[in-house]
Amino acid sequence: MSIHLQREMGKLKSRLLSLCAVVEDQVQMAIEAFLQRNEALALEVEERDNEVDQREVEVEEECLKMLALYQPVAADLRLIVAVLKINNDLERIGDLAVNIARKALAVAAEPPIEVFFDIAGMWEKVQAMLRDSLDALVNMNTQLAEDVYTRDDEVDRIKHEMRLRIEETARRQPELLNRLLRFLAVSRNLERIADYSVSIAQDVIYMVNGTIVRHGQLD
Image (cartoon, rainbow, N blue to C red; front, top):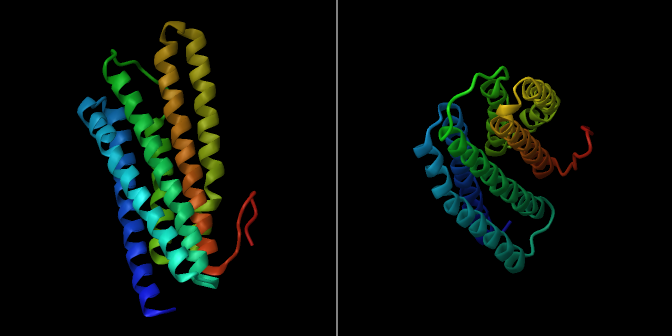
């Protein structure tokens, strides 16, 4: 690797990790806004979305510039390709945080209702997956990345059970349907964040050893 490419790689990693921190913070604020019915926090998530979008564009432009200028091969090329994919996944996670924040705004404007499904518990598992996928990225830790990959089924199971409970509650209390659908939407957004966390973990594995991990297969 040339000195110039090495320096640019360092800058690229720093940009990506900075975006990781912003996105993780966005999701945390969004779910807190929903659980606490905090309108101000939800609005802050929406306002900060432009920052996520701008950072995503900057990382993509940097990747494309490096591809054009240095024509990297082997591990260097893998790293840039993986960064492009992870960068896109992070931006989409940011969008999901905004979706949750908007549901938080709607919930905050309505009287509270008693619910029998654990959004907070689901978030705890998804948060751990997201955090560990990002830690795997920071440390190039394929073992941790594989561990993230194995936890996705549990989140899917929780979302399925939550949907069944929401449907049951809606049958008993149809007047709550619209508000219950907001909880269902948040659970779906959390499931998608878990899916993107798995995608990031898969790209870490690809980045480190060149193995493509998809469709439920782990080597």
